[in-house]
Length: 195
Image (tube, rainbow, N blue to C red; front, side, top):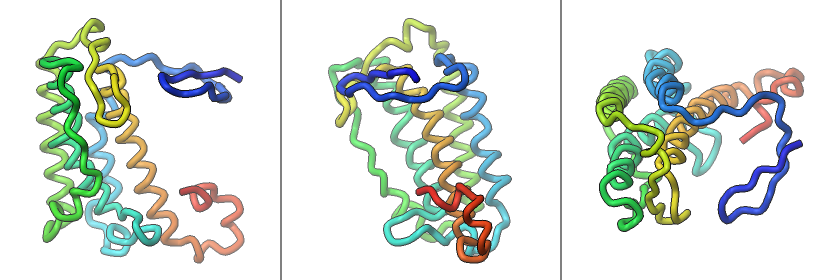
């Protein structure tokens, strides 16, 4: 067991089985660059129930998640990175509207959303590369509207984990479409037990 402390948090014990990665930009962009193709491979061309069904009231479908990722590309990751580099902690980040995709995605096909996401991500990663960020930059701080001071490193690491979190969410939502269909095997399928 290992105790992990976060700023403004009490210690929590976690079981550590493998080495925990230290943030580095190249491995981070390995994930960020693959998310569009991962989503396209998982979702493109599927029938409506796979992409529009969710887990219940106030839950998101795969379609909703892709719209949310687009909104993040436009208003979250790179705009906040720019604030950290140019203004530091003097100007808080703009609050992020976690539900903007519901209006912004209206009338668009999933394929349109996937293409938009891929284009925006490609542009954002090209901009990120052009910045030639160093370890010195990663320690710079900005001000999150809820959390207070955060480092650029934390922002970038969160971008990666946010992608992985939503890829996992999409997979879980899709699996739960067959929750009642798998019969007794439900006891072996952990993906059907988690939210």
